[in-house]
Amino acid sequence: MFPSPLLRLAEVVIADARQAKLRICTAESCTGGMIATLLTEIPGSSAVFDRGLIVYTNRAKQDLLGVPGDLIADMGEVSEAVARMMAEGAVENSNAQLAVAVTGIAGPGGGTPRKPIGLVHIAAAREGRSILHEEQRFGDIGRTEVRLKTCEAALSLLHRLL
Image 1 (tube, rainbow, N blue to C red):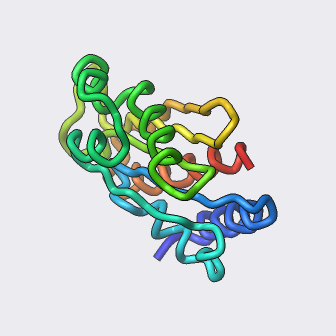
Image 2: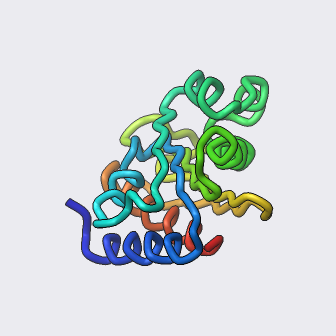
Image 3: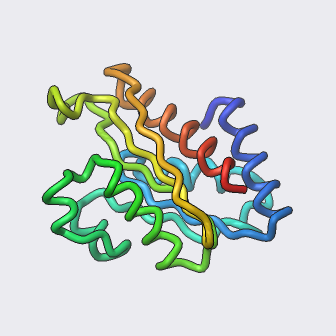
C-alpha cells in the first residue's frame, strides 16, 4: 500500500517510540488518516500507537482538538498556528505523549495565490518540549503525491522529537 521508504521510516518511528516508552497520536486533515494507517502497517505498532484523529472539518478541529474557532477564522485552517494547536490538542486529548498534526491543500482544487495547492503545515508535539513546525510547499504534483509526501515529512518531524 505504501512505498518501501515510507514503511521503513514508520518502522524507525515505531521502534524509537517503543524504546522511549512513548505513545503516539495523529491529528490529520489533508491526509485523512494516512499517517495513522502508515504507522499501523508496522507489526507491533499497538505497543505505541494510541489513536488517530481525522479532523477534516474546522468543526472537528474545534470539537476534538480544542482549536479555537477564532484562530481558524483569523489565520485560516491551513496555517502554522492551527497546525501547532492541532498537535498540542492531540496530546492533551489522548493518552499519547507525542503527536503529529497536518493541515494543507492536497488539490486538485482549493488553492489560492496565498495558499497554493501543495501547501502543508505540519506540527509535532511532545509533552514537556517545544512544538516543532514545518511549512512544506510540494506544489501541484497531484493529490496522492501531496498526501504521501506529507506522510513522509510528518514522520520525519515526529522522529525529531523522539
